[in-house]
Length: 182
Image (cartoon, rainbow, N blue to C red):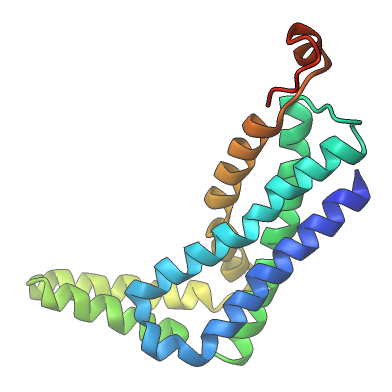
């Protein structure tokens, strides 16, 4: 299991890291609104490796069989390795190449509040929240925790769906007269 999990987890992590780094030169053109779409699309692409990892484990280690629980375990381990790669990459990018990212994001959210017609009190409150968030986000451990939470929901969903699709028990083959049903 280690080989399958490490191989597919690291490939998935490399894809998410590569796609993150590839967007850095275009960060100003992409903007924060579209950046969310680009980022989550990259996560979905990288988490496709969870599906292929579970399938590889089922075919090569499980001899064509895998329970939902086993598939879930393999998928979660692949996903966690990918998430760790994502976090490490963001930590390097944020603290070495985008030191003003927090300030730009805070300004973006404050301007968005102004444009939506927020009151002066609401804007002041938003400004104070963003100041506190920036102070927290500049702590590498808190930054890593927040960053880990970004891909996690996508990875969990991809893992659950993959485990459901790929589960195959021995009795499934017996019940269907040798036909393989996924």
